[in-house]
Image 1 (spheres, helix red, strand yellow):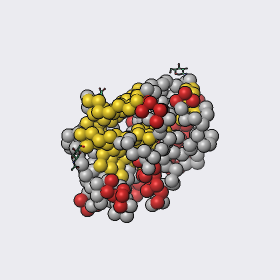
Image 2 (spheres, rainbow, N blue to C red):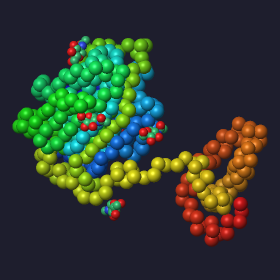
Image 3 (cartoon, rainbow, N blue to C red):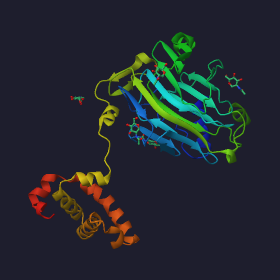
Image 4 (cartoon, helix red, strand yellow):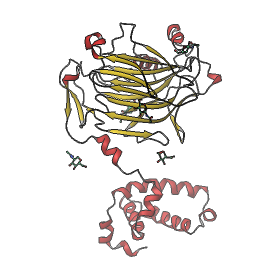
Length: 366
Ligand SMILES: *[C@@H]1O[C@H](CO)[C@@H](O)[C@H](O)[C@H]1NC(C)=O
Ligand SMILES: *[C@@H]1O[C@H](CO)[C@@H](O)[C@H](O)[C@H]1NC(C)=O
Ligand SMILES: *[C@@H]1O[C@H](CO)[C@@H](O)[C@H](O)[C@H]1NC(C)=O
Ligand SMILES: *[C@@H]1O[C@H](CO)[C@@H](O)[C@H](O)[C@H]1NC(C)=O
Ligand SMILES: *[C@@H]1O[C@H](CO)[C@@H](O)[C@H](O)[C@H]1NC(C)=O
């Protein structure tokens, strides 16, 4: 079983997610949408909540802290997982990570394609000086010679740089500045089991040694999880990802699953557009950015959805607040009202056009 098969079946058995988690659509068996490409190179510092259009939390919750993204098992059966919405078609994935120490806890970095090619880093929590490398072609797990075992000092307390280099000829696993393993195309069953189709990137932690799991899995995971001794946390500080192709999407043109069958569709990737967007502003920043008269315009926007009276009330509240008298003037109930209404207003605000209120002459209001 490949790693994400195991994880997916486990989650499915708990009815947490559908058994489709590892691949929503297998293009060798059915028609699937094209894979959105990264088509570029980018580094992410995982020190604040990531753009959800690029990074999807597919299970559980991740704690975004200044020191990195914390993937924690705090209670039985928790298994936070993060997945890129974009794919790379050969490239480099560099992850700066601290594994979670603890019997039965598995930390992982996985590249996974829709037809189940897979490239793994895995840390078994019972050994904090080892990382395992692995790969699968088309989900085939019939041979037992694919796993690699590599020494890495203090993997739970020190960030190390785990880099996967992947092209059509070879796959390399690097720890810091050291090349620890190379897999050549021909070495993977003459290439037929060589990972070679566009892959997304997944990070996750998993209590594989949960007492309810099969004995074999618990043994593989280094023993049974002691939840009382938790939480168990994997931390990712930063990630650099490079796509060796530039384009908008990747398309499977037949059911061979070979890299030659992948068509790179030209264009700007939506991932790059997201990356280049200015960071979203908070509501209060947006509010402050508006010209003075616009503040009134926002209320007009609210009025058009039938909230004129309420908006007027909010207007009053905000004026009070700007005069620094809000604390005294309002009780808790009013606070809550204000928050709710401001959220509603943000919708009106985003639709709103400056010219509209000018035409309507509301610039005099404030
Ligand atoms: C996160 O790290 C980036 C790059 O070092 C920095 O520019 C940014 O201010 C940091 N954000 C937070 C919330 O610390
Ligand atoms: C994010 O993951 C959830 C859960 O797997 C899924 O239902 C949703 O479609 C995903 N969203 C994107 C944008 O990929
Ligand atoms: C941990 O892994 C290292 C590197 O593979 C190995 O030398 C060591 O024996 C392992 N320790 C245990 C307790 O299994
Ligand atoms: C991480 O390791 C890779 C492979 O050795 C290297 O190319 C890269 O520069 C390293 N990154 C940092 C930030 O040192
Ligand atoms: C891609 O982006 C560039 C630069 O932003 C722009 O000039 C070009 O028109 C875009 N191409 C398409 C197909 O949208």
